[in-house]
Image 1 (cartoon, one colour):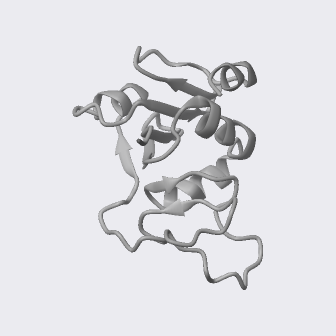
Image 2 (spheres, one colour; image 1 turned 90 degrees about the horizontal axis):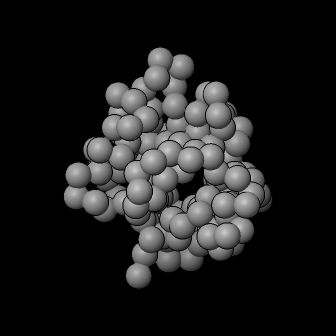
Length: 145
């Protein structure tokens, strides 16, 4: 069974862009990868530009540019699997939200269980079922591993 999550970045005007991630959305997995690998706004924006994910990994692309076999069915270890790029799905583009709270409220059907937001001021925040944003720290990802 999947643990679904949403990964977002806050823009300078207060709006946010987000993508859905189907697998391993709990803090001990996706939270850990985001905190350790995607605390650079440029890299995170690139991740979000590619749209929804089946699974998050430390790398957006295979390290070897000649590695062409990365697909949903045969992923390269340590590389994200994107719904569009690697599964050829459509309608998987990033969503725009008016503010950080709308990332949660736009989830009307309750599909996502965890939400992650990289803010301009506070770095990584996360929330789960309580819908209250908290700082994503190494302690949080260790406790929720």
